[in-house]
Length: 397
Image (cartoon, rainbow, N blue to C red):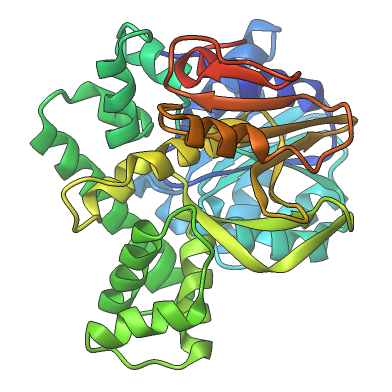
């Protein structure tokens, strides 16, 4: 089993904290594995089995605990003494009014450490932020990054064949057990269908699955480009669907809530402000994009951008599109006092492309690191701007 140290290292400091630990991520990205690894680490420190309460709401044996009152009683009945109890509630969004239980346990018991996971970030953040009033800490969990994928699949990470396998089929952990492309497709379809049925139809009440699929198709076709509501509605009209702008954004929001796509905002570098217009969308997992894509191949240049964007998120950065006076920079990534600028290119195969990618930083007058990432193997760094091979960058610690 791959130990996801990136996440464990962030969570360890909260093992005994009274803050509620929330792990949020798309279905099948590995949240349950991380919970089990936390359980094993806690046991290694001497915690007894009877002081660990683990409920997985996707298992039939816990189905009746989806009643929040029964869940509350079950947990309290299993707390027998004053020693600390570790409570793990996996895929808790299946419990109606789960936030009441979580808040009640945290407020009424001083000897509990609560961990919960969910596949719907808006659901968790909105409902719990109101009830818990800042008494929780949120950890976003993503599918495997490239380095994790190659470790789990036991593949040579330096081979371009391995890299394009990752770009094409994504990083959902269970897909590495399949080598036949038809099997991979079948698995990814099953994951996507479960997202639609559980997180969209059941939780959000949006039953027009055809519209949902069409909008996702548009997002895939325009990944990494400025989102235009007018263009999206024209696309849907061409497909025989006339909808209002309000309906468009309801379904777009549903795609975000189900964690299938992520919205990235623009940041005005000179005005130092986040802009709410002309945002872009990227896929949480490129394997889902592959099975929902009607074209023969996904645009490789934008797929590389998507890989870099996801990697930056996993490394703990807040990521924006950089708006300059003359254009834009693919990504601005910030973390505490750290800031980096990144341009992503397929190949720097002409003077025009080189000038475009390196020239994107011309308006910047600060000393923060600036990178151009591409698949070129020769180092083309110049004028203080660092050029790196994307695969080598992905494999860095």
